[in-house]
Image 1 (tube, rainbow, N blue to C red):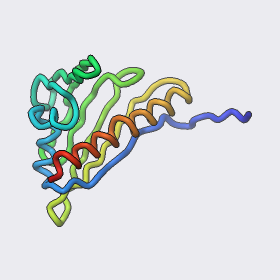
Image 2: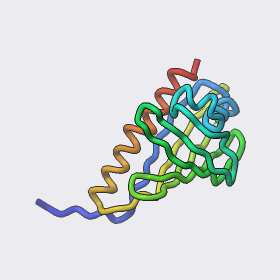
Image 3: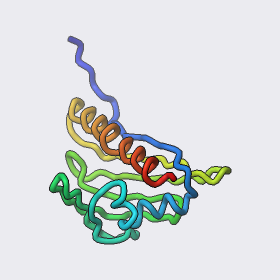
Length: 143
C-alpha cells in the first residue's frame, strides 16, 4: 500500500443559505437564548469580543469554555475553543443576500496530529458538527 502524506494541515469549510436577514442569523449564534434552540443546551452568556463563556450539551454531559476573539455585528464571529487535539479556531461569516437571506460560511482551523488523525478530525467536524448545526438552524429557525 502506498503511503500518503499531507502537505498542509486541513481546514474544515462549510456553508448554507438561511432564509433570514443577516442580523437575525448573527443574533442566533451570539445569543444563547436562541442558540439553545438549535445547538447547545446551556450557554453562560452572550458572545462578546474578549469574553469567555461556557457552552453545555447536557445530553452528552459535555461542557466547554469558548473565547470570543472577534465579533463584527451581523458580519463575522471568531471563537477559540478546545478542539479534538487542542485549541482550534472557528470563524462564521454572514453574507447578506439581495433577497434578504443570509449565506453563512463556517471555517474551523488549528487541527493537530498525524495525517490520519487530521483527516478524522476534519471529517467529524464537518459532517457531525457544522453541517448538522446548519441544517438544524435552517429547519428550526429558518421559518
